[in-house]
Structure formats: structure tokens, C-alpha cells
Image 1 (cartoon, rainbow over the protein chains, first blue to last red):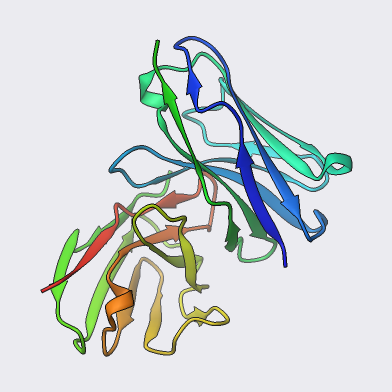
Image 2 (cartoon, rainbow over the protein chains, first blue to last red):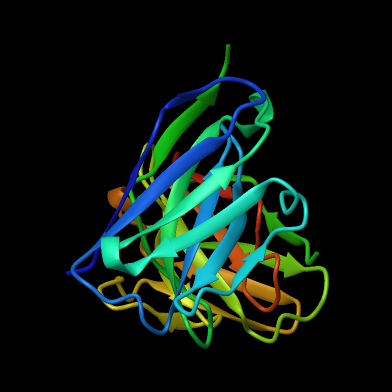
Length: 118
Length: 107
């Protein structure tokens, strides 16, 4: 079955760039959106953005100036970069698969806690 | 952005009870409404999509409904494994947004 797994540094210094990768195993990228979501400690979920398998992207406006999502199907992964981080970016970051049509977030990775601190 | 207002923020109930969680959107979302269950330290699990469509493997005691701006999640005959936090989410338009969550606790 399809599985998603986040990876990357768990500690990032303020003003630096947060970089995470989501490895997709057991399935195809085609006809799905691939999304990043985050959850600050004790808070609700915040959608960051997605990339369609064709490469088109949409980002949430509040992060648009700092975020980039890319896709590398040859390596079976998609990635998140968030620039100029501050302590407010400390959160559990999840990757998820989003189906076409109703945009169901039907499959999630286990999440990775990223702390922004000097 | 579409704002999602979820109520109540917390709820105490007993095994066997029936509970209802409400989610209100700031504008019509035409049934583009999902419900998730999240347990502590785990990723969210999709329970219901398109307002009322139960996902494969989700027990039938979970049900959803609503249209326009008002949606509900009902859990009948609560089981011990149902005590968790529940979130609604709209996918009618980007940016996709979530409710603030409802923490369901054992009374």
C-alpha cells in the first residue's frame, strides 16, 4: 500500500531555510495533489500548499513569499522549502496525498517535528 | 479565506453516548467538507469526505451531514478508541482551512 514518510533536519536556526522531503512508496504520483500541512504545538492544522503531479503549485497566501514545493518523481519524493524561518514556524510538518475531485486528504505521513531555535 | 468555526471546542462524554460536533463555514462550501480524527502524537485520519461519505474502514457509528455553510459529525455509541480530537476542513477553495478542533474526552 502507499506510504508517505517525512524526513529532514529537526532543528533549524532562525533566518535559515527549512527543508523537508516526503518519500512516497508503493504508489504513483499521477492524478494526485501532494501537499504539506503543519501543526504548531497545541494548535490546529494549517495547510501550506500543494503540487500537482504536472508540477503546478498553489500556496497559502500567508506563506507564499517564503515557501516552495517541488516534485521529483524519479526519486519518488516531493519537497518543502520554507525560507527565513522564525520560532513561529516551529511545528509538526505533515505531508499528505490529496485526491482529485473532492480534494480528499486521504493519506498522511507520520509527521516530523521541526524546531526553530538558535 | 474561508473561516471554519467548529463547536464545541471540547466535549466530555461516556462510552455508549452519542455526540454531535458542528462546523460552520464563513461562506457556502457546497459539501466540500471533510472530518478528521487525530489521536495524540499521530497524524490525522480522514473519516468522512464530501460532507457525508464514510471512508473505507471507518465504523458506521460515524456519520456526517450538512450542506451550504452548516455541517455536523455524529458519533453514535461511543467506543473507548473514539476519544480523540476531531477537525473539520473545507476543500471548496484554496487556501484550504481547518476548524479549531473538538477534543472529545471521557467523562
